[in-house]
Length: 166
Image 1 (cartoon, one colour):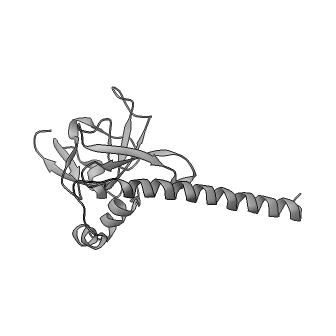
Image 2 (tube, rainbow, N blue to C red):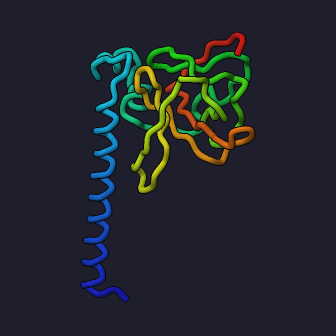
Image 3 (cartoon, one colour):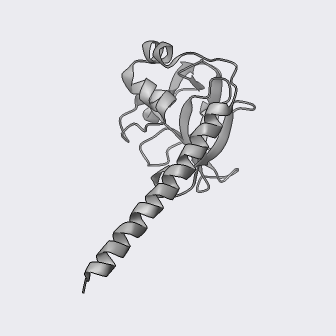
């Protein structure tokens, strides 16, 4: 049975939790903003280059809907690159079908990506971003295939694909 006290206490607890999560996320965002990248542009320049959907994902850490990216179904040999700065990120040799609806890889190319803690969504994840321009790519999880056991779950809008030798 709910009492006035339990409802008020529960609501206050929820607001406090959301405040802590927001403060933690703000700290992560401030840390990301403090990072220095080789390629920097104004928000308006990024939006003009990328278009609205890719800009929201790459520059504002949005997530595209699953099963909407043609890159999830890409099977050719080649290289997946950052849609923001064209840095090679993943070889097609490390791509696999995770069944999640997003392009997934078990290993990035050397010196291609960086990670940082992401406290949004109410739990801690490891966000993956381009080491050259800082663009948000997706997240990495510990439930991938051998040999690394990692699943780099990337937004297709964050990537471009160049066919050829991987």
